[in-house]
Length: 146
Image 1: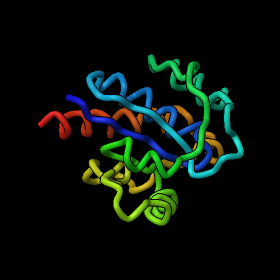
Image 2 (image 1 turned 30 degrees about the vertical axis):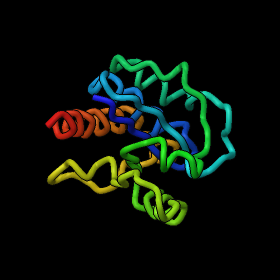
Image 3 (image 1 turned 180 degrees about the vertical axis):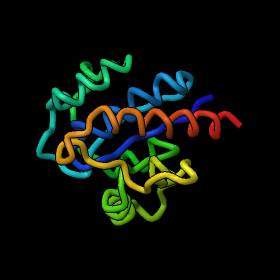
Protein backbone atom coordinates (compact mmCIF):
# COMPACT_ATOMS: atom_id res chain seq x y z
CA UNK A 1 0.00 0.00 0.00
CA UNK A 2 1.40 3.40 -0.92
CA UNK A 3 -1.23 5.42 0.91
CA UNK A 4 -0.24 8.68 2.60
CA UNK A 5 -2.29 10.21 5.43
CA UNK A 6 -2.01 13.56 7.19
CA UNK A 7 -3.61 14.10 10.61
CA UNK A 8 -4.51 17.72 11.36
CA UNK A 9 -5.50 19.64 14.48
CA UNK A 10 -5.08 23.27 15.50
CA UNK A 11 -1.57 23.51 16.97
CA UNK A 12 -0.13 20.08 16.10
CA UNK A 13 0.93 19.39 19.70
CA UNK A 14 -1.84 17.10 21.04
CA UNK A 15 -4.44 15.43 18.83
CA UNK A 16 -2.75 15.22 15.42
CA UNK A 17 0.60 13.91 16.73
CA UNK A 18 -1.36 11.25 18.61
CA UNK A 19 -3.33 10.45 15.47
CA UNK A 20 -0.08 10.11 13.56
CA UNK A 21 1.49 7.72 16.09
CA UNK A 22 -1.62 5.59 16.48
CA UNK A 23 -2.22 5.35 12.71
CA UNK A 24 1.45 4.47 12.16
CA UNK A 25 0.97 1.54 14.54
CA UNK A 26 -2.39 0.49 13.07
CA UNK A 27 -1.36 0.94 9.44
CA UNK A 28 2.43 0.49 9.25
CA UNK A 29 2.37 0.15 5.47
CA UNK A 30 1.12 3.74 5.06
CA UNK A 31 3.06 6.99 5.28
CA UNK A 32 1.53 9.07 8.10
CA UNK A 33 2.35 12.60 9.19
CA UNK A 34 0.69 15.38 11.17
CA UNK A 35 0.36 19.16 10.99
CA UNK A 36 -1.65 22.03 12.41
CA UNK A 37 -3.82 24.71 10.88
CA UNK A 38 -2.02 27.17 13.18
CA UNK A 39 1.70 27.82 13.14
CA UNK A 40 2.49 29.18 16.61
CA UNK A 41 4.00 25.87 17.86
CA UNK A 42 6.27 25.39 14.81
CA UNK A 43 9.20 23.16 15.73
CA UNK A 44 7.87 22.28 19.19
CA UNK A 45 7.51 18.71 20.42
CA UNK A 46 4.05 17.42 21.34
CA UNK A 47 2.66 18.72 24.64
CA UNK A 48 4.17 16.88 27.63
CA UNK A 49 0.93 15.55 29.17
CA UNK A 50 -0.16 14.32 25.73
CA UNK A 51 3.15 12.50 25.31
CA UNK A 52 2.73 10.94 28.75
CA UNK A 53 -0.80 9.68 28.01
CA UNK A 54 0.22 8.30 24.61
CA UNK A 55 3.33 6.63 26.06
CA UNK A 56 1.20 4.95 28.74
CA UNK A 57 -0.77 3.32 25.91
CA UNK A 58 2.36 2.32 23.96
CA UNK A 59 2.70 5.25 21.52
CA UNK A 60 5.85 7.38 21.27
CA UNK A 61 5.33 10.99 20.15
CA UNK A 62 8.77 12.22 21.19
CA UNK A 63 10.31 12.33 17.71
CA UNK A 64 7.57 14.54 16.25
CA UNK A 65 7.77 18.32 15.82
CA UNK A 66 4.88 20.67 15.11
CA UNK A 67 4.49 22.18 11.68
CA UNK A 68 1.72 24.02 9.85
CA UNK A 69 -0.31 22.60 6.98
CA UNK A 70 0.96 23.85 3.62
CA UNK A 71 -0.63 23.96 0.16
CA UNK A 72 1.82 21.24 -0.87
CA UNK A 73 0.23 18.84 1.65
CA UNK A 74 -2.95 18.71 -0.46
CA UNK A 75 -0.89 17.14 -3.26
CA UNK A 76 1.47 15.01 -1.13
CA UNK A 77 -1.23 13.20 0.85
CA UNK A 78 -4.07 10.96 -0.30
CA UNK A 79 -6.17 11.46 2.83
CA UNK A 80 -6.20 14.38 5.25
CA UNK A 81 -7.98 13.68 8.53
CA UNK A 82 -9.10 16.68 10.59
CA UNK A 83 -9.61 16.26 14.31
CA UNK A 84 -12.67 18.54 14.43
CA UNK A 85 -15.14 20.47 12.31
CA UNK A 86 -13.37 23.82 12.69
CA UNK A 87 -10.07 22.41 11.40
CA UNK A 88 -11.92 20.63 8.59
CA UNK A 89 -13.44 23.98 7.56
CA UNK A 90 -9.99 25.59 7.63
CA UNK A 91 -8.61 22.79 5.46
CA UNK A 92 -11.47 23.12 2.99
CA UNK A 93 -10.77 26.85 2.72
CA UNK A 94 -7.02 26.24 2.20
CA UNK A 95 -7.37 23.41 -0.31
CA UNK A 96 -6.21 24.29 -3.83
CA UNK A 97 -8.90 23.67 -6.44
CA UNK A 98 -6.86 21.03 -8.31
CA UNK A 99 -5.61 19.14 -5.23
CA UNK A 100 -6.38 15.43 -5.04
CA UNK A 101 -6.32 14.83 -1.28
CA UNK A 102 -9.55 13.56 0.23
CA UNK A 103 -10.64 15.44 3.37
CA UNK A 104 -12.51 13.80 6.25
CA UNK A 105 -12.94 13.96 9.99
CA UNK A 106 -10.77 11.54 11.97
CA UNK A 107 -13.89 10.28 13.75
CA UNK A 108 -16.00 9.82 10.58
CA UNK A 109 -15.53 6.06 10.95
CA UNK A 110 -17.24 5.92 14.37
CA UNK A 111 -20.93 5.14 13.92
CA UNK A 112 -22.25 6.31 17.28
CA UNK A 113 -19.40 8.46 18.53
CA UNK A 114 -18.72 12.17 18.62
CA UNK A 115 -17.80 14.09 15.44
CA UNK A 116 -14.88 15.95 17.00
CA UNK A 117 -11.87 14.72 18.93
CA UNK A 118 -11.98 16.96 22.03
CA UNK A 119 -8.93 19.16 22.51
CA UNK A 120 -7.20 17.77 25.62
CA UNK A 121 -5.19 20.98 25.96
CA UNK A 122 -8.48 22.45 27.23
CA UNK A 123 -10.38 19.41 28.57
CA UNK A 124 -7.31 17.85 30.26
CA UNK A 125 -8.61 14.35 29.31
CA UNK A 126 -5.45 13.17 27.56
CA UNK A 127 -6.07 9.46 28.16
CA UNK A 128 -9.63 9.72 26.84
CA UNK A 129 -8.34 11.36 23.66
CA UNK A 130 -5.77 8.61 23.11
CA UNK A 131 -8.45 5.94 23.53
CA UNK A 132 -10.85 7.72 21.15
CA UNK A 133 -8.10 8.09 18.53
CA UNK A 134 -7.15 4.42 18.94
CA UNK A 135 -10.76 3.34 18.32
CA UNK A 136 -11.02 5.42 15.14
CA UNK A 137 -7.55 4.48 13.88
CA UNK A 138 -8.40 0.78 14.05
CA UNK A 139 -11.49 1.39 11.93
CA UNK A 140 -9.58 3.58 9.46
CA UNK A 141 -6.95 0.84 9.09
CA UNK A 142 -9.64 -1.78 8.38
CA UNK A 143 -11.43 0.51 5.90
CA UNK A 144 -8.27 1.54 4.04
CA UNK A 145 -7.00 -2.02 3.69
CA UNK A 146 -10.19 -3.03 1.85
